Length: 123
Image (cartoon, rainbow, N blue to C red):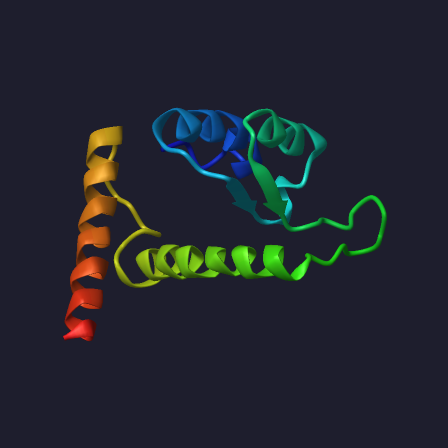
């Protein structure tokens, strides 16, 4: 958890390092905000394949993913839908408590509600 003023790309390298210590993964899937040489390089140093949407800010041209990369990148959309649902329907956008533990508890209640809703949909 971080402050709202922290851009996601500033946390990419520390989060990749923490994740690499906890789990074994082969790919780093990120959107165009993370398209920087330092993030690509660090992902490679961890032995991961970085699948990061290309940001055409420098070259003006959008790079297209290979078909296997495109399929793997699509998996990000399910995660993004959960985050959007948490923000729009389960109080993730307007948090009115202070402190790491209280904020995390607030968000986890939303995640539990989303999980319960998904489980009921499968029945």
